[in-house]
Length: 259
Image 1 (cartoon, rainbow, N blue to C red):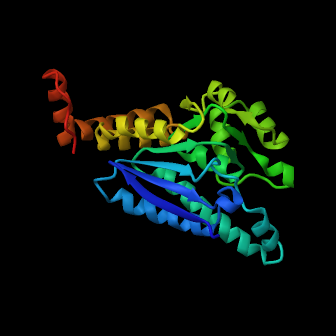
Image 2: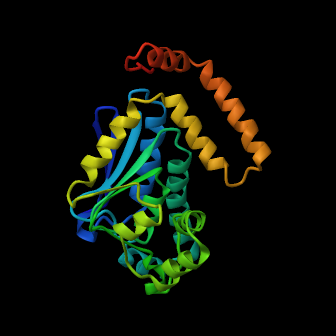
Image 3: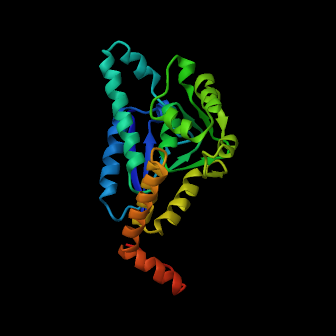
């Protein structure tokens, strides 16, 4: 069986499903390319307002395919570098995608699978899901932006523990650390993610895009730069059609209808 990324829709939500069940949805170049292509298409599709990324079957993603990585050791180093560049293109496209992206995690999210979940705007996880940065267990170091995402979310000592020790961490602890948005009973992560997506889909897309851009830029902006960015986004959104609809609907005590 080959690995692939299945694409379906649920209302205004695009559902991308990692499909490589023989290797517990391990990632590969075919998935990276399909992921970038799917997000590029969804960005220009006004009918799509959010994206959910999940895994086929009981596992979210086992990370990299170790058999493929072992084979790449017999190839020039550029082969693996190109593969990681493809993964990183997908990660970057998730971070810069102007619509909400939600990870729905069942079972294990290991290695690059954990990094993929961290790249999303929201993380919904089954209460018995397991997360592990398994790289050091096989004498490797992180990819997929895992070290970047964790270092911005947790104290250095905890990040070092996760990356160097490669120990498993469950949903309850990860939620306590602020990295899991919603915990749900096993088997219900996708449904819970779709419920969250439906709530987001009812909000003004331009406002959500502004919020995502502001949050992405905040860590590297000075306060003055962030204040300038907030002013620019606020004024643009106030004068957007949705700004008038949102305020009017609130004053008229009715649900807004955003475009």
